[in-house]
Image (tube, rainbow, N blue to C red; front, side, top):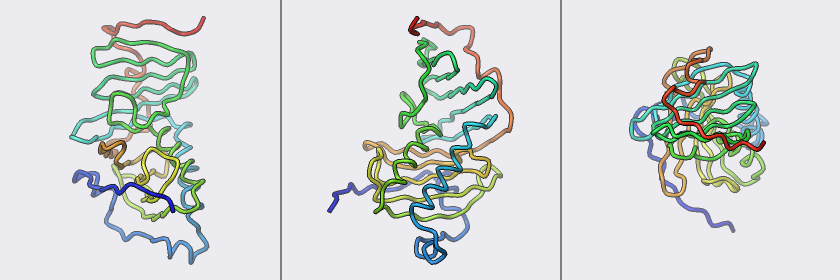
Length: 224
């Protein structure tokens, strides 16, 4: 029998309201009765979140402790900026730029933001959440419950997952909007609590966020 840590899921008031919603949860028994399995629930959520890679948008999140972060993404060419209290990350087709709070920045060869959480922040990226969902989809023994809610004025589908193997935490919850944007995420990872909830969403990119500020000090370490 697998030994699993017991995690306490306590989110701050705003995220709790979003994650729990005002509608009743559709439990797994109901899902199974309708012919939907655990794997179906997780796989369908992963497919929905994977749409985020093709979106043009600006999303603002409230993080644990009341901090805020933004994710901005544009297409043709694809580029994404993550701005958080600990710094920023800029991904382009030519390189990945990581900056600390003082805007000391280093550019390396292109690399997706798949770390969970994003280094130096409490922000879980859509890529990190998707990686966790893809891993969970391979677990035949997890518990999954689904419900719908509204986040930042947009309909979202949510999953509460428990007894998950192969991810940084065995228990996490997330919501994904109909468009494919990450609506919320909640988990305890390595003893730290992570709660984030979407507070604003625009279907356009804040182009200023996709450029480094003039005061940034950039060191280019890309392979030549």
